Length: 175
Image 1 (tube, rainbow, N blue to C red):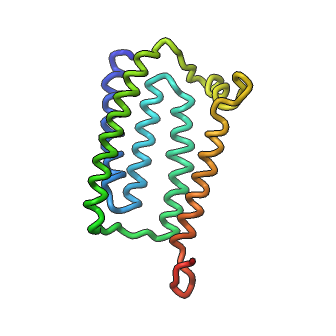
Image 2 (tube, rainbow, N blue to C red):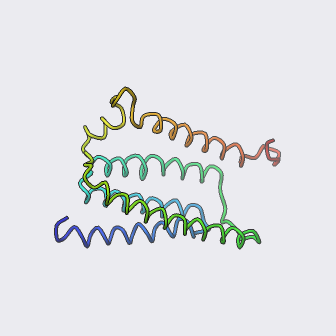
Image 3 (cartoon, rainbow, N blue to C red):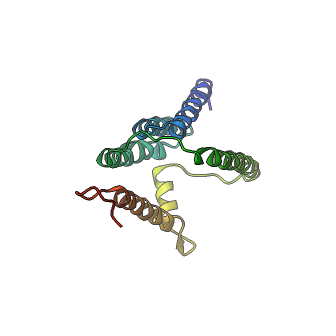
């Protein structure tokens, strides 16, 4: 990275970190969704600085654009209200602290492994990403099944969220 890219990278990283804390800590779901849009745009900037323009554009178009519009549509459709705290929140907070510690340890392990395998280069161009996603390498697609499974999982989660929180006209929850 050149001289100006380093402070911009760290600035975008701080914005991404703060936006992710707002997403998790905010009790109003629409505010959390808008903070998630800020997070996705900051990540797109980070990908752009790291010479991965294809992933940066996908981050903005797919995640900050289409997926977040879908999330906001579902939130508005369900008229989700502000989340209230409960007694279970303290119990869940200890679980969150444990998961955060595990996450930090996992990041440390990944950074150590990344330094060991720095010789393997990654082609972040559009053609390189297409080869990794869709072209056969050694007789099987590298990531196409994970890509398809993720899209089916997201669709099923949205349908399940709508069905679980949808009220009938007489005010009863569906079974």
